[in-house]
Image (cartoon, rainbow, N blue to C red):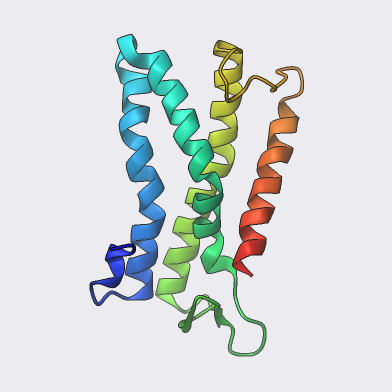
Length: 154
């Protein structure tokens, strides 16, 4: 089954939480190894960067989905027309709050992890072309990935 969350009768909010939590569920074991188990720190850090780079566009696109609202008087989330984009809607406020936190985790956190990996292991295949003297360059690359993910949503 390609989408196990579709087998159950869940609301859009519940399905979105499952999809948004997926990348974190894959990354957390490697993050634990990278920061808590000294013997496996370098390998876990490399694996963490690799998994995060693969999931970056999906994670950013999912995190920003609640921000894409329709235009007009009765604005609603494009992916879920039943959820209005107003400060009075508790579901919308929760989705936007969680989406903003996930955007910070993946957008800013992944960039910091890339810079850290580039400085500790400059021969890593993932950061071989990265130049530590220009750390803002990686921010621009991640901004391009974010724009590609967001434009794919429209």
